[in-house]
Image (cartoon, rainbow, N blue to C red; front, top):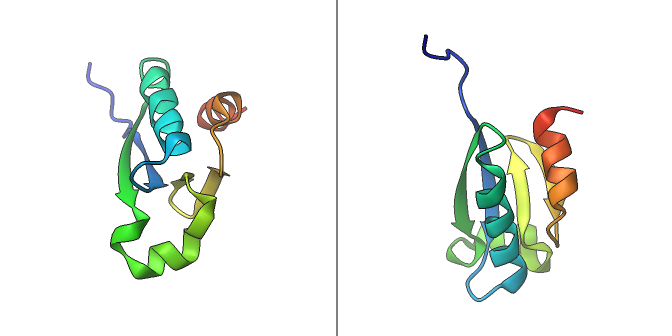
Amino acid sequence: MASDRRARILTVYTRRACTLCDHLVLALELMQPRCDFAYEKIDVDLNPDLAERYGLRVPVLVEGQVEVCSGHCDPALIETYLRGD
């Protein structure tokens, strides 16, 4: 029977040549087999409003209006958030 649950969709606000952003994306890739979510990457430098909003805080991981983490990758925090613990 197919699941009627929808995968959670996270957004990663990032910028090019950002090692911290690359680490966050890698952590998400490694978590995907254990947690039900999808993610999209948005380059803040392509949108002046986003660049002003997030500035040097990238990477920023959000789900809807909830900011999960910013400025660094904390895989344990992200996984705890996704599991709802």
